[in-house]
Structures are given as structure tokens and as C-alpha cells.
Image (tube, rainbow, N blue to C red; front, side, top):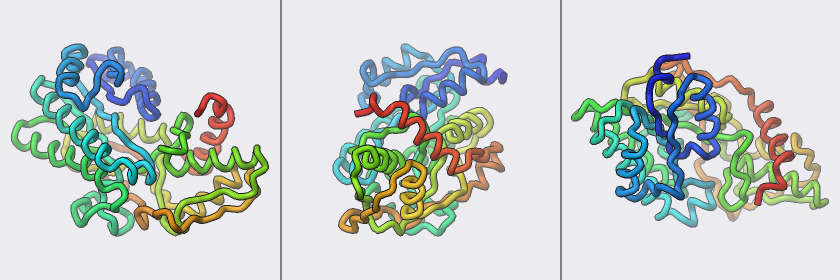
Length: 316
């Protein structure tokens, strides 16, 4: 157990969420004893007064900022203003007040949506400013990318120790399976399993299947964030990914096969594809703090499908 985790007070925003639950468990396994999780019912982190109260109540040495207002293509298209405002105000104010109150380390979690729409694959961190993000999720991506600007500016002027990580889309047990706000993997798993159970012979999938995506298993993502929090002390952006790129068509067919759906996939080309390709160069994460994803994609999908089968009655 590292002294870093044993002897400091931590705030994990979003600590009761999908990634946060895994992250806080791993922190406890490392020896962390004081982990404060601000719940939205008690602290609305878009409100600066609530941020002040939360920091006074927790008095943290380290903040890991996971909290985000986030969703898939549909949710981003329906709520672009909310996604921009909530994520920008929450992140920028929290980092500013963390610096003001003497927090020693701030880990900001960005998003792959911050990258330009036509970034060469694999995405290298140095390309992050070479164009405008894909339009459907640009407000969210740009709001999160401002944390990179702030991190670098505050390090330059104030010597504030903040870092900025860029994870790809996450998946795994405990994911969000609500079809109105979920990402592609949980949405497809739910559609396939429900269709098979109800005898439905076809399901709709958005777009034409041509875009590619990279996915990171939630356990791997938590490990990467914790390694960076402990060992990385620069404001360079750092990708967190698996190195496995797959087309949406191949993904949908793989999920249908693994979940036992024998019907037909209907591609709704009136719906947006999103960014044409996504795949990350993960060299910097390995060189800077030794992170490399371990979970194979097929095993991770199987684990996620099994979790959904066991818990689907509790999910709305």
C-alpha cells in the first residue's frame, strides 16, 4: 500500500457513479481511508456556493473530478446547451476553488469528444487542437477541453499541480443501460436481450455502421486514473484507451452474437453516425505512468452482458 493513498484526504466527484464506484473501491484497496463523495442531492457542483461548502466539509488534499453531465449521441443532440454549461461551470469553478483553498493535486477527466472531427487515427494528444470536434457532441467536448487550458494556465502561473486525462468511451458491469441516455454498448446489449426475450425479429441501430470506436473497460479506466493521480505531475493531456478499434457494424454483430440475438440488425441511416473514426495512441500513458489496458474486448463484453442479465429487472 502506497503512502500516497494512506495519508491523504480525497474528494471523488461522481464517486457514486459507474466509474466512480470502481475507482473508490480501488482506492480503498490501495489504502485510502478518507474518501469524500459529494452527492448531487447535497452539493450541486455547478453552483459555486455548493462548491465552497463541499470543500469546507471535506478539506481535501487531492480531488479526482469524474462528475459530468453526459450521454450518447441522442442525449448530446437534445441537450447541447445543458451539456456545455453544466460541464464547463462545474469543472472550471471546481479547479479554481481547489487552487484557492490549497488542494495539492487535481485530476481532471476529459473526453475523447474533445478531439477534432477528422483527427488522424490513432489520435495523438498533440493533435487535440487541430480542428473542431464532431458537431453532435462538440458542446460537451469543448466544455471538458477547457479544463486542459485551465490546468496548463494554472500550472504556469500558480504552480498548481493539476493533470488532464482523455479516456475513450467506457463500458463494463454497472454501466448506464437507460436507452435515452446510454452509450452504444449498453444500448445494444439491452436492445438485443430484450428483443430475444420478446421474440422480436429485428432491432434498429443508428447510422450506417461505418464509424469506428475504441472502448475501455471500466476497471482498466479506474486503474489508469489512479496511476496518473499518484505518479503523473504534468499538464500534458494523456489518452487512456485500450488500443482496440472496432467498427460499429462489427460491434453490433459481436454484441448480437454474444447476447444470443438471432434476428436482423436494421441500420437507420437517418440517424447521425457521429465521429467517423476513433482510436487512441496510448504511448504517452505507458511512458509517463506505466498504464496499459489489460481486459480483452470479448471478455469485457461477456462480463457486461452477464451483469445486465443479472440486474435487468432493477433497471428502468
